[in-house]
Length: 136
Image (cartoon, rainbow, N blue to C red; front, top):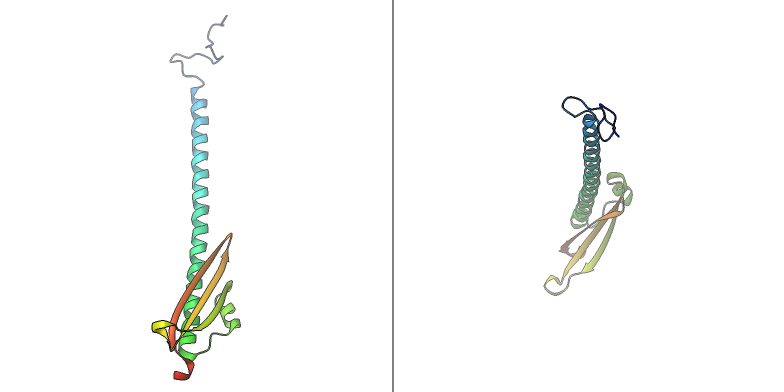
């Protein structure tokens, strides 16, 4: 048996019958707001990680291009100490090979730059054919 003035859930009845619903609405609103903030935080973290990867990739391109230009113009690469100073965290590897087929008589320069970013690795490979060193 219900006592007078109380609803089925034990909430006090008022004239319009809405007592207690404001609390429920507040809890639901705060829960939705917390979920929205958590979603934005995750999206922000993913965006920051992508930004770090793209920055590392851009640094790899700059280091590889500078090394390739130095090799093509002077025949010597940039000193490893300077490479580490100018592009910290970027490893640069250079390979030379004789040209084949239509590229016979030229030297193929290949520069690979890599940088570790979190669990991913940014890797850039640039190639260029130049006249053999004796022809310059």
